[in-house]
Image 1: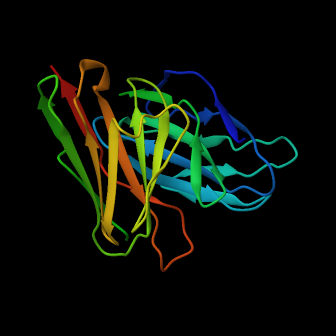
Image 2: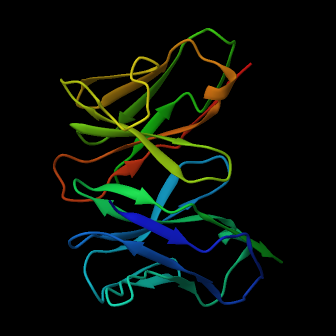
Length: 111
Length: 116
């Protein structure tokens, strides 16, 4: 079945620092890839997605590129803000859009 | 955009009682909804797929008699935790797919269940 491996957190950064959260996956066929964000005490919100190889998903300054050759979908942001503090989940679809999630990476941004 | 609403947001109940959590798609129809469980600082575990008008499909290791799922309409699925125990305390999240759009599922805000 599908699986997702994310870098362990927490990732602690100062405001305006560059962010990278690594994500690699295993999947059969041609999956779609997602990044979700979860703020404290809330559900998941879709942050960005990519549906085929070499696609770049982007939203709110975050971006990730679907790299089939390295089976990766690393999340990046050039300048993080305190409000970006949250848990980020990488996910790959299985069949009928049922995502398989990574363990999540906590991001803490200090002023 | 598509909105999925869960109710309640949090609930505290006594051991042995049952708790019902509702998941509603507010502006779209959803033949299929999904229920997840999230342990502290861990990922989401898919518990079951809820299908309107038919029985839910449970993931391996999930007790169907413990976690009753009913999907009686195209906009509502319910999860009932029966005879709850402290180990059932967790964060439960539902998601729903829009029948009329070829997109990913949308997530509710989650329900924090605490069994005392």
